[in-house]
Image 1 (cartoon, rainbow, N blue to C red):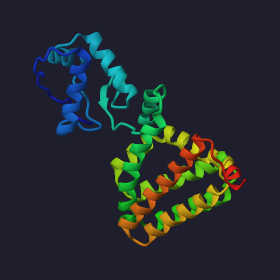
Image 2 (cartoon, helix red, strand yellow):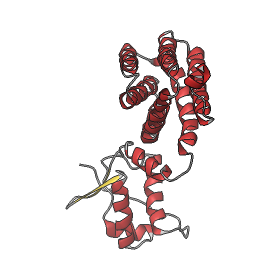
Image 3 (cartoon, one colour):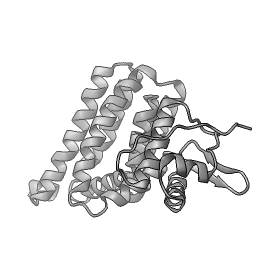
Length: 250
């Protein structure tokens, strides 16, 4: 059982009550004076020391429970929790859902995340990671004519690359964008209807990425991945202007 933590009054900043409560927890968590499992002092005392009303404090704490930062337990009090980063997926999906060209914008973030992750994967990947990448690669081949299964296999391969990099921050960022990234993978798979030649590219490019990681070559791994993204963008551009394999063959 953890003891109640003593806190000092935050400096009066004129900010809203919510901001004071959020700032208090944020600063204490960053400083390490609050840790998962610690119990906050009673609401009455906390509200007085933060200079906010108890209703405002309760609302702020309820909002923090949704984020997984705290847990309010009957007859126990408010307990600090370790948040589940997966909630970011829903947050980003809702936050970006109504923005135009959101997939293009998120794609730029994806490139930044995955290009660093693939370099780390080439250095840190384990035999278990190689097996997961090989399995995902096999599913890409098996589902090449299945838009739904294929987009899921494609996403799983790239997620395996990020996981193989062993960077918790990159993994959290990539997972937080997974809802939108799945739309991106699905959209690219739909291009196969216009470009049958894209099937070979999809399989060979993913195999080249896999080989570069297994070969422990960070520079080459990043180069191959960037080329993979660039070729995919080229197919999208060609589709946007009405090109297709059928037109080019006629």
